[in-house]
Amino acid sequence: MRLRDIGGIIIVDFIDMKTPDHRRQISMAMEEFMQSDRAKHSVLPLSKFGLLQITRQRLRPEINISTGETCPSCHGSGKIRSSQLLIEDIEKHVKYLKSNLNAKLVLHVHPIVKSHLTKGLLFNSIHHKWKKKYGAFNILEDEGFEFLQYRFFDESTGEEIKIDG
Image (tube, rainbow, N blue to C red; front, top):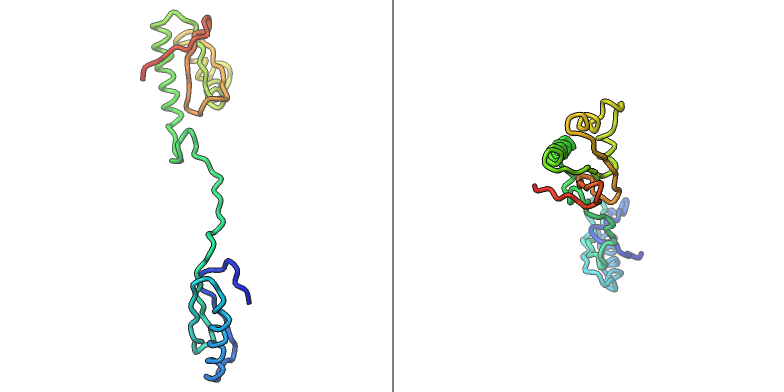
């Protein structure tokens, strides 16, 4: 019997092993066979039910390759900010920029966020409501953005408009 990369408890069942002499012979034979094993081990005598127990140390580490990456949006927590809070932040910035700057705004967002802002019937989308409230501006999707990332640009110069907070 060869025990390759097996560690822990190994149980061998010897059915109908009633003679005490035979039990001793089995235990001694197993001890003898296990002497050449490099792994740390112990062989216990047969139980009254005919079970031989071998404990054995695992020599090589378990092969377990981790192929995961930490999510750039939630940083491994499994949670991100509510989309409603994101929409409120964007609206707050649109309101501020439209009232304080004389620039044509272009909002760059993740494609899913753009879809959320422009979904629905043409006149029922969040984007359309904001246009009526604050004036016209464009929304462009940027696949390189993280889900919660957004930036404003001046349409005429192409320069990013920095926003605080």
